[in-house]
Image (cartoon, rainbow, N blue to C red; front, side):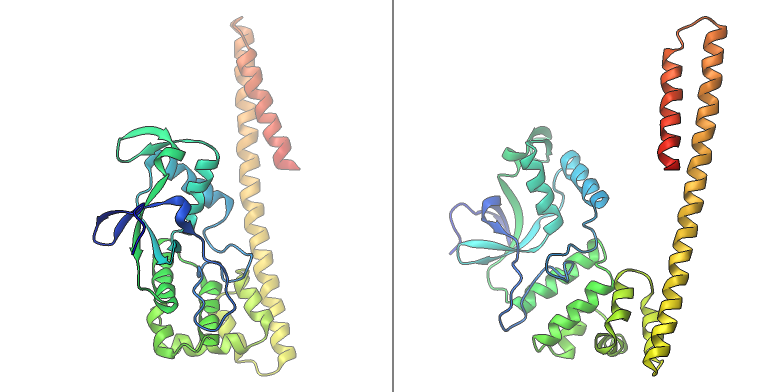
Length: 288
């Protein structure tokens, strides 16, 4: 039976005290070991957790409210989070900041501690680890794709837990050929997977490398491919940097002209000097 503090809203929707919602812990026991598929390696946050991405979500929930319920499963006296880790971490951050947030119920700005004392969740009482992982994978990959490395790691964990091909294909929504190639990648040299994880090669390139039987030749081709990718990235960054520097130099020229005009008209030139100073500081920062 659910605690009285869980307010039923209809169907499987409940308002659950935030204090009763726990993040999933990594487990080592036998079984499917449900976990957030984004975080495919213990202690490492996956796709979607970069500072800019989390800051954008922080601003969205602060200004617009929580638009989508979290998904939890009830486990004895508490709820285990199945999907919504980024949202829950953002809400906890807003509470710690004692931020003023938009309340979708009252249409007003109120304290995050008040608004999110309870959170709307889809709650499941009878859900095993495999079902939880299937739902978590689907929810996560639909909102912000979890990435190739995390997907492959999900397959590895399912294999270790004894999942069947049917289980894995149902969870990942992939086909048999994809699973066959993924199993080959998991059995291959770890350097190939590392390069794939760091976006230095694509999945297609990784699979092509597996066709090279000689390990030394395969390593040589991998290194050349990664070097090419690194050089391409450096060139792109340089082009972006050059464009930014050029735009800042234009700002400096425009601000300098505005200072001259202010002097000729005998008006206060301080605002224009401040603008010129900021543009020069921006250029100094870009050049370092």
